[in-house]
Length: 440
Ligand code: ADP
Ligand code: ASP
Ligand code: MG
Figure 1 (spheres, rainbow, N blue to C red):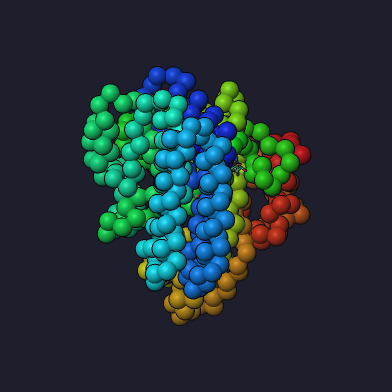
Figure 2 (figure 1 turned 90 degrees about the vertical axis):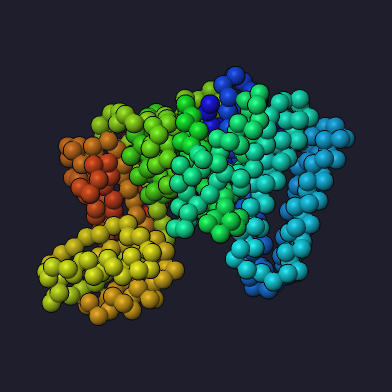
């Protein structure tokens, strides 16, 4: 059994869905196909929720109508026969009736999660109608029946396995399963999700739960590139990454992968492949247990970082000081990404301002607190990078023109991270592309 996950752009146009159908029927290995929503849909659903949260029902209705038009014309191109189009339009009737009803009732966060789930529900149902029209035998298995998160909003592989295996077994003779990425049920049984970009996470969780031979992530680029292709001109795919390297890159901003999607596959030693739907013959990137070659493989950048500096000449050297500081972040369930300390100060970074005012207030008794927003973490990732000769001198040479605020080195064998003002990101990534990879 293998998992094949197709992202938004891979299903975003009718001809792309046709192509996906070809890719999944190429060979006989049984497979679970995980689909995202059509590209742009989840953003649109977010804006519907935003409008309703502001009680702007007219705006919400306007957005829903535009989305509906898009789906109605999508169906006309996706399907050729009248019965199939009829079936697809009935599916759309249901989902758009739901969205329209929601504009008339009182809005809350649980309803918002229902809104966000519509994209994946529609893409998989439409794809299933297309497969049926083509006579391709398959089963559409609802992710809401087996994908779950616990009381801490974390998915657990054993819990998913326990529900997924009977669902698969209830379709004897079927070797092609289609399901939704991203969506799940929470501990209260409500519809929830694995956060933006979460379809990758679904794929990895399902691959681990079903002990798959491989988890293929099909997207619009031929693998993990050495730098962010949206920011710098010339980038190249990285052939091989270890699970650790891939996890660091995903966590520190490589958008091609959801930040936490590596651990489930890693926990069951399922290799992950990043492949291009538009160029299926390209080698892409293989992510496995093996570390592969030593040295720098790629850089990534994570925006929206907040730096907090606590200065205290009296307390820092006292034992227990750092614990007290960290406890404040623990209390507000806010993860810390980077930490540096000196004799009189500690600097750390977080990636959300959800509880910032409360955190600052509770830190103030410990010393003078300074907050800098609009920061970016740039991570340089590679196997045993900390052992790579001259890496630091090369980095500092390359980044001479950049005001680096913090450096984290030695915490992980695979990563050197720097904190820079976000306004310097473009320059920094371009300098690293030239300095580390010789690319312009
Ligand atoms: P999908 O909709 O298939 O999940 P995403 O948009 O989430 O696709 O991820 C693919 C995109 O990630 C690429 O189009 C690319 O612009 C972006 N990206 C950012 N950093 C990298 C990187 N280091 N390597 C490859 N792609 C990257
Ligand atoms: N559709 C969801 C999103 O856009 C999940 C995904 O595509 O991975 O975030
Ligand atoms: Mg994605």
